[in-house]
Length: 454
Image (cartoon, rainbow, N blue to C red; front, side, top):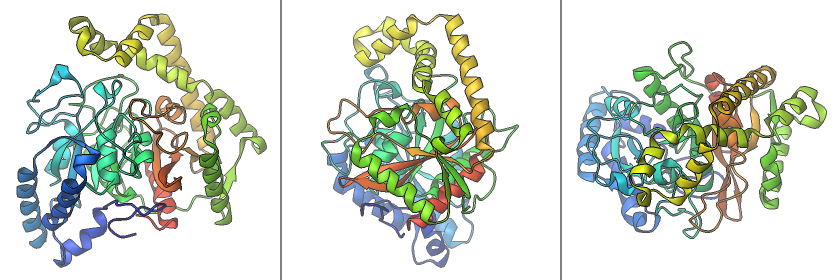
């Protein structure tokens, strides 16, 4: 669909790469595109509150430079001139990085994070910093859901998802440790992409969990998300990218032959209307000729599904153990400046021994191997991106029970804005085995194209 679309509900996503042919032809320019984004920011930011900081003058100057390069036929990359938001736990040299915490109020990083440096070297235009929950795990930010302001936008990449979901930006950076890219993408009607663990560099990203933290984009379309992730990996790599360049390639649309419907423990939390919408989506896939496996009829999938039960608790234990540095130091130095949610996590982590932590890491490694074995026979796993549409209220950013499994597994996962429930977006989660990013992106593109999306 064209600029300003939402597949299920008629929203305002504003894809970038869909306009590239117009930049080449001269019928549109990056500066004009930016001005349309700014119009939306000025119209909606007072209510949505997606941004912790903005620099529109610098963005306009950068968009003018990109416009000149496109006019000369010399763009730096397909994202040259693309407006980008940066989650406020990711360092930016020209804008403050405040982590959603009073402890970092006004703090300025000396250099850009690796991902920001890669995108700006490719010509992307940083418009502003997007709100995050406190250190990506604590108290909620002021951001509101752009579809229904009295509902949560999700977290922790709250501002990134809200800005993309309502057309303020085509692209924003986020992070996920348990559910912080895919859940807000689902709630706000954006595309969310969590690459395989280690595919993208975490340099300049405030740490939360050393073995669970993922960097990834929230975007108006699969094309935009894939282009951003690919550029970042090609410029700076990641912890595992050197051995396996998972994101290299164009990822053309790929028709899946077999997909597996996973029913994890989070299915017990599914709201009835959301469950019905998802079941209808699966039925529609079958009508299009895709075999969708269910555990009841497939022994290998049934065995895997039973082993995935407990993945959320496993993910939470690992997070709580690993977040002790540096958050426990903050709490010791300034306990009144650290939110209760973080203090509760730290108290739970203090009860976990190193021996128990090692056992959890071993259990995670076993689960990852088992997922890879089953994944070899399918083109991806399907499950909802959340328990339903965004819940009412702002203190609670939504359940993570649908998202913890693929965070601890470390494989690629997408939230695709293909459904709506009660007039609110509701995402489809498409997941794969670690390292399977390229093939899975092709399936994600096929699913979006089939729904008329980007």
